[in-house]
Image 1: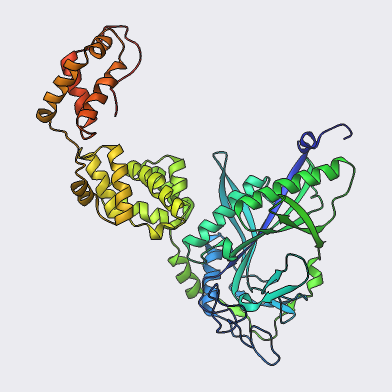
Image 2: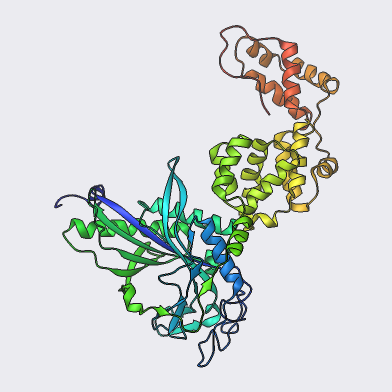
Length: 499
């Protein structure tokens, strides 16, 4: 492809991506011992002889971890292996004190599942090869100058599941959407808190290129060290460009593990990639086979909540929300529950959607809090909306009221009364003010009557000024028009004035 730019060459190659998502399970204790799984404890304090791999210790399986893994596999539409086992995955690394990891290999808890995402307004199914249960490793902390590495073993033995996708993802954007869907499903099922900044949701990506029309996959590279959905997309975008440059120059992509350097927005080689057989898997001799009874399986299946995609469809079909609104509201279970509580208090669904997606989420973003910390209760937000609907305050005033409600926790009725913000809607009270405004602004009246309909806004503005913003704009519009009549036919643009 001599003389062809990398961007032009990209059009000749199809991107093939598969993701391995690690999700730490929301248990109080580790998977094979009683140590705490709490995040943020001083290094190497949540440890014991079992998770540190001391000789003579034996693992005891945490039933709660199995149940959470089962919930996750069912929510991901997997076929459940009711008889499965654990295996030893052997490798040597400083963060693995036993010299092996207890995992699942050929008989995982779940197989052959899928997740649906929306790409360009259409749904696409991403297959899931397997969901398996395993223990986490410790955390290596490398000195910036490369002089030494410290290891914190608190994370060793924390239960997690690995969700391995099929190579069905065809763009970095699809990879991000798939990850967002996985995170949302795990949070809905209360399987994990999915806090990427704490490492409870981590992702490795495999990416390769192949000429369009070719069935065989190209040589893949594995990407690590991606701590946000945005970085996953950026790393894959860079790697696709890098591999395109290698292939278009006649080179060969090497199978290796690369890390994403956030500072340079590039991927950097870490090591050559080992094949699966290098791990020397064999059945874990210290654990009996795991059996999931029919009763257990059906109990867990029956406990699953309405999942994000189904909830999104319901919002569109039953509440009449636009698909975009429904997608935003259902992405986070807490936000969806908050929205539904507002509607349950009598609020119009679309108006409630506007408030939640607008003022509520913007205020949460500004404070860095999640919806659970929202100081405006669903009932109080619905109450604020009813004040607007009743004409007591305008939309503009309502936003000011909301800010005070956010800061004080007071309800709308109290804030309106204390701030003297009640809107004036009584025509008798406004009539004299409107008459005075009309008398003092003959030029605006003449302009309006001659067809310059935008002059109405000036008259409304003067009335609002005279009432210190308390007049109901709709009532003001009505009173002014009753007095000055209609503009001449053929008038130029503009409808009723707003304030």
